[in-house]
Length: 247
Ligand SMILES: [Fe+2]
Ligand SMILES: [Fe+2]
Image (cartoon, rainbow, N blue to C red; front, side, top):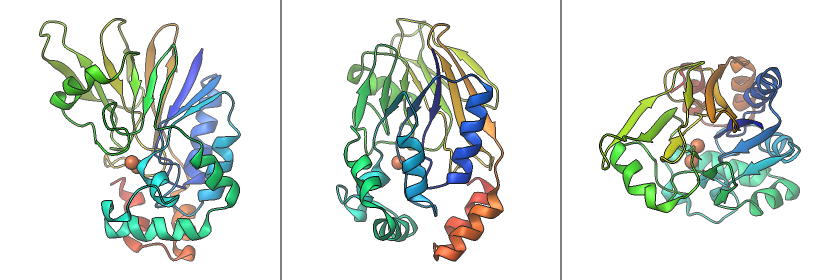
């Protein structure tokens, strides 16, 4: 089966629609979402409703989703994220809030594991280093493990030549990796709605669970429209500007 893997939409419906169009072109049959549906952007209800309608869907909750529904302390966030979370709380519909409430913090299917941050700390840890990857290996069984949270397209795998080592790199647009079975893998598809690797295009991936092949995709979308809607909503200028820089 071919899965569309995405994360960190952050209330950006324009970016999400562009990613879902790309998934259609790649014959995607099911969806994997690694959390942070809301926060930062101007369209929380539209994003939650769109994701809730995707079938079949495996989705986990992110730290921004938890903050918006009152299950994570806002003190954990920077002032811009706090302002957006408070705005989102005020804006979020009962139905959207109920969908977020029902999402688990981790999921295991026969094909993969899904968490937002890391297997050992799904709602908090940013998985960024080879040492963190090694330390997390005891906390999941099914590989690959898809993560989000850092908004960066990290790919980690065990270094077979060195039992304590890891191979790691940032995936580029159209790059393919075949996840060799029986060794641990962690893959981050990057962020749909707020990329932070100096590439402003939405980021996502396609995973073929028969070939065990993951392909990263970057997808352009209408950034000025999102920025205009953020301005109208009164969201912080810093969050509006950073979309244009992918930062
Ligand atoms: Fe995020
Ligand atoms: Fe996050």
